[in-house]
Each structure stands twice: as C-alpha cells, then as structure tokens.
Image (cartoon, helix red, strand yellow):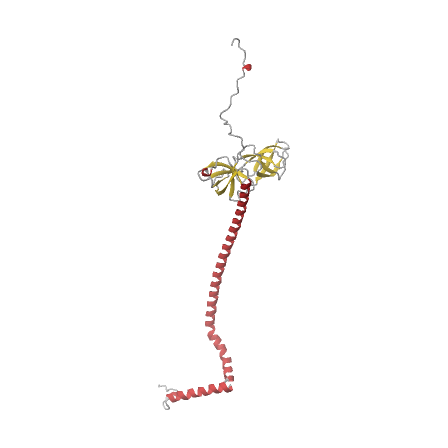
Amino acid sequence: MQLSPPPLFKQGTPALIKLAVCLLLSLILMVADYQFKTMGTARSIASYLLTPLETIMLAPRDMLIASYDYLTTKGSLEQENEALTRRVAELTLLANQSELFMSENAQLRKLIGIQEQARFKILISQILYSPNNPLSQRVVIDRGASSNINPGQAVADHQGIVGQVVRVMENKSEVALLDDRDMIIPIQIARNGLRGALHGNGRGRPLELRHMAAVSDIQVGDVLMTSGIDGIYPPGFAVATVDKIDRNVDKNFAHIYCSPVGGVNRFRHVMILFYDAGFGPRPDPSKSIKPAENKSNRLYRGKP
C-alpha cells in the first residue's frame, strides 16, 4: 500500500509559495497579537495545559541538577570544614606556644633580676632533658666544665632551690633534684629558725624532714629555708613547705612531709650558684689527726 503525502505537500502549488504564505500568516498573527493581544487567551490556556507536562518532562533534569548541587555543596562544605579545623588547630597551637613563651620570658626576667641583685656569681642555664632512670630524679642542663661548673654547686630557680650538680661534662651537667634519694639539704624553718635536714625520698614521693622531735614547733605551711651551715647552699633560699605532720606520742620523732617550692617541672631555666661561704678547703676525712701522746698518762714502770 502506497502512502500519499499530506494535502499541504501534494504536488500542485510550488513549495516556495506555500512557505511564503505560512511565513506571511505567522507574521500577521504575531503583529496582531502584539497590537491587539489576540493570542493571549490561547497562550494562557496552552501554558496552563502544558505546564504539568513540562514539569514531568523536566523532572529528571531538575533531579540531576539538584543532586549535582547537593554533592558539590557537600564537598565544598567538607573541604571548608577541614580547612577551618586545621586553622583552629594552628591557632590553638600558636596560642599555647605564645603562652609558653610569655611564661618563659617572665621567668627569665625574674632570674635576671635575681642575678643582678645577688652578692655572688649566678649563671643561667637551660634544662635539656631528664635521664630515663627510675631510681633517681635528675635533669641535664646545658652548662658544663667549659662554663667552670663544678660538682656540688647549688642549683635554683626564681622560686627556690631545686637541686645540686652531681656530675659535670664538657658542655652539660647532671643535677640531682631535691626528691632524689641521695639528696640531703640542711634547712631551717623561716618562722622560728629551727634547724633540721631535709631528705629526698625518690620520684613521686614527698620530701621528708627527719629526726625532728615529736614536740618540735613545726606547723603545716611552714616554709623551709636553706640554713647555709654546709657551705654549699647560700642561706635564705626557699626550699620546701610543710604539707603534713604525723606526731606519734609513742615515738620520739615526728614524720614531717614537705613539697619543694622550685618549679623545675614547670620551667625550663635554672640558676647555677657560684656561692663561696668562705670556709676554706674542707679537711680530708681520710686523713685523721692523731692526738698527741700525754706522757702523764703513761704508767710508771720503774727506771726510765
């Protein structure tokens, strides 16, 4: 069966004339609609009827656009959130470092002030590290034999005594802290001048003021100062405060527990004290002086 073309396109009138007629009619309708709004009603009806269909047809496109915008926005927000998180961490680190530097600068100013007012030489040093030794409580500082440091020198900070130099190398030294088991420092109570000896008990344990009578005039909160009688620690430096006193009436001595005032666990700088008590060289205990023989104590055995 052979299909025939639509009547408009059947052979007869030339196609060019037909096209010209269509264009002319379109132009007439456009001018009439523009001038007299003749097609407004038809256009409104067509728009009302075709809008739902247009919405249905464009729904897949709108869903793709919405999904793309959501994923793009989510990715941008995640990147922005990560950037903000990193920035907050950086600002927090800078704030902590700034606070640390301010604390160190404040401590250094206090140390320099003590250095300028002291009657003896003071050398400021920085704590390098703490040796990993559970049996001792020590730190290593950045001054040694090249700075004329000697074993036995007292070490302090702006709050008080922190320890004593026990080993010297060329450019660094080892300092035993107050709570080291081998540390003993002569003290006196600032309130009444009562003297005693403060002992270290090891890492994590309080200092102990030993061999004090149970009836001694000691109170919680008393400040212990260096007495200076050993010639190593200059007198008048704060050492510790009394935290707890156990007085047992059945025993002669009280158990007195103290905490150091020095902030070696909080600060990085200390002072090495070049203190000379003027006692002169210490006698060698290995060379004992023999007492002179008293002839009157010899027994008489007849003729000499």
